[in-house]
Image (cartoon, rainbow, N blue to C red):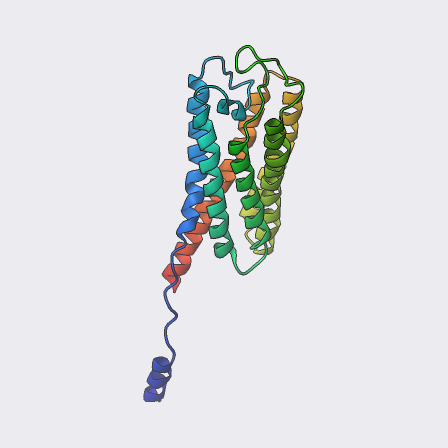
Length: 234
């Protein structure tokens, strides 16, 4: 009997080792790099008021290349993370829709970097409070890339909230759902604030972006931890 069991065990090859999903590391880097960069740039730029002006305005002026590069790097990292997230979530609910929406967010960041926003709220100095009319690159920045990107990011949180609920990850379902709701509500308030030249619109945008990037960073940590645990149990 022992010999038969030995033969069966020998005939059943061990599963090959799974390649580490290093693409998830991009999700760890994207948010912190983006936030730290715009915080430093906003604190050192003459005439720029972080409470009042949008992050995109940092791409204007002589040092605007810093924020432009920030958009591009964050966009690439978000797309790379989306690919890694797709791999880590398969198979199961949200494995396609969630990563796809995060990839759209990444594309929105790339577009925001390529096409500069228009001056707003008097920045840079000497410009009118609102552009009239809006430039073609300003329209592309705001309506073609930024708006769909923010909408997709909020939708990703809500979609993955449902997916985590189906996967019986209750804590993550609640966190993703609350983050998605807060993100969407604050984005609407931010948009209204900039339209009305509200003095705290910049602060609202920073809170919105912070909620989104914090969620994405935490998601990267979760998926990397889950992969490590799964590998240890193999």
